[in-house]
Image (tube, rainbow, N blue to C red; front, side, top):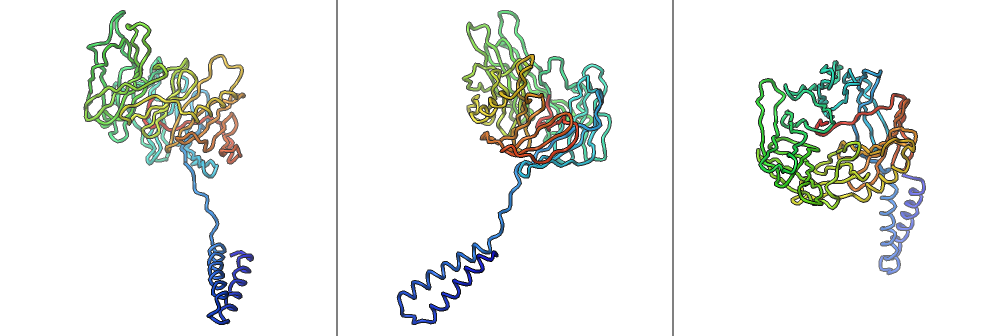
Length: 400
């Protein structure tokens, strides 16, 4: 209790006792006593109140490259405490990655154990993850036929389902013959468990009528409870624009739902689209340097452009390099119900902004060749760790 509160309490007690010693029938004294009793209670509460405790904000998992060379690196887990504006290293490498030039992208999920995909490089067919440290890591090896997760054109066609401990595979795209449609064609989604001897299950769904091309952009969940996001073209119909569809998979049945899209069915940018899922909300980079969003659980899903998020994105683009040979596109990531937007600054340092679903900035990271630094929503610097600033965030679906 502060000295001011003690003094006020002492004065209140003294006045109250003095008043009580007078005639109890005195109206003025009764009013005074009541007032001083209330004042004493207020002073006691205020004087004894504890200091406000700062509640932690979101905690984001990340891995940072260590002992890196042009061909290999160790991945060390870090924890980014956004509420406290701090970075903390585990101090121990989780995995060792080799053959980086041929597709060494680290895909992993946080938790215990940390799930990491054992990948094979696209060109050499050699395993990319060659060593596991003493850390609690579960190395996932895709079944035969699903091992080469990287594709030549870079589109996503495989993902991992945590609950089922299985990988799901879907063709990258379907194309009709010239002046023909895909009517009568089907899209086959195959799911196969990681356990030895597990049998593959396939869900075959007819494509929507009138389409000439269907490109699979994103997949999540199993064939009994998941979805596939598809961008379709209707070139046979004159002046027809593209369209965006959700294939909802439920109890091994597939249902197509066309998304209400005021933006012309355009997702893919010149550099390829980027996706991040936060709960049922699927965020993606729009071709017009925007970020779109689809609520995949909505009865009638629609494509929206979240205002606050895109206002932030526009400001980030103002600070990007002026010597870029191509149109810079932001990258999206997510962890712990938080959307993370990556965009380079004028010096090509990677800047990460963590935002909530309403678009409010919670904090950020800045990574360069020598350090990784955290900062709060107002730009105040927090932790700074001297290390090679190459960061890998987790993936909800271990997709590529």
